[in-house]
Length: 82
Image 1: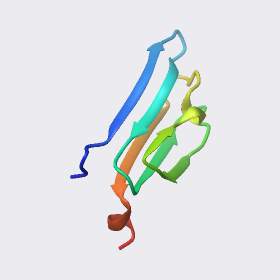
Image 2: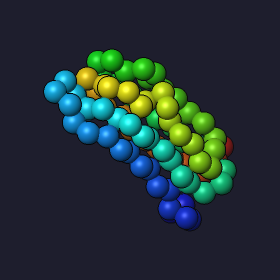
Image 3: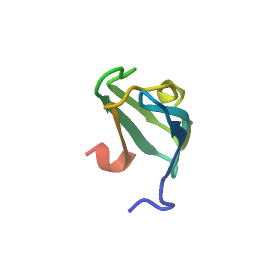
Image 4: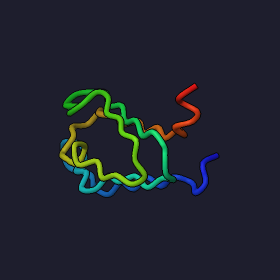
């Protein structure tokens, strides 16, 4: 377990065609890898990664159509270096 535990905040609302994501942020302990994978119709980027403590994912803040999915994976940099 990572300490402090990572926090992923997603803010938005449902729309007639899918959803409107107005904020997507990640706050995690120092030296972690943040990987976001995306799939489905209208995906802006299929894979995005960054080594950061706090990040604002503006690339995914949009009006995605229904059927789009996001997977946020946060791992320790020491674990993924093995």
